[in-house]
Image (cartoon, rainbow, N blue to C red; front, side, top):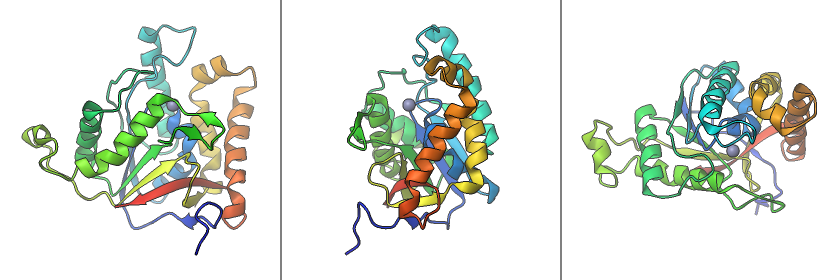
Length: 247
Ligand SMILES: [Zn+2]
């Protein structure tokens, strides 16, 4: 039997055309997996981003009314660096996202609009590798996204979506969780790494508030350390990892 926890990571499935990434905040995808997104868009695949919030509670010194638009601009710029031009916001409230039917419905609606084969989200588990507590927003959005992949395909779970013209989409074949402590699959990080660094760096206001380090050095060391930590399970190649749930 393959050791699920420490065995080799498999290459991500490649027989798909459209991916939808659903996360809680601006910067979640840039910390989590944008090197993989860059590789996918290079290969001609379509990737769209949906964010539950605008990250308006993310910078202590900036009032949410000003912070939301600022972080939205940074998110759109960072998506563009890795070839993503569709960025949508669901306008749940940063820091207090509630797991529940409203969130599942909004994500199911997004899945029906975009009709992806692959759905991406961020770590839905309580902790980051057992050492750091995860935020309630990440847990709520990650779980709701895993659930909504099924909701999107069922005509009777949110019938109001069908009434709005959003036909069921039962075509999601995988939900891939970035930042999971139980990864199963990986993407070679090298081809997209430079753009991943530039993409994270677009969250400049957030990063400058977070650290006294040089922003570019901070982004580069965070992303390369994560990718290199996965290399021993991916043939020695730095990698972006995912826990993949097939459907
Ligand atoms: Zn976040």
